[in-house]
Image (tube, rainbow, N blue to C red):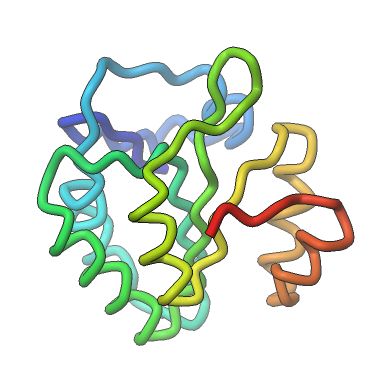
Length: 144
């Protein structure tokens, strides 16, 4: 598990309960998604068995072009990429709509869901089910 703002922090050694760790982690401001994707790339040794969940508002403070290219490369290699939009304190997503549209062109599901649905989402992804169908069954609206 890797978290990021303008820096990248690898929390893999603290990964007893991924959901608890995810919701307990807070970093500072700023976003460099491309830096985080660059960091995780060498760990992807079996792309068809890899699920990359990008939790972000998609407002890229780093190199946007490289970020999109890197995500496209991951998808082309067989990585299942999911873009889970960050929620604000009121539970609503606030995100870069232009980036979400580019992710749609790469067939990367981009949506927001509650923490309660996250484990079921991951179970569906691990079973390699069609996430577009999963979203529809749960009434989750895609943002791209």
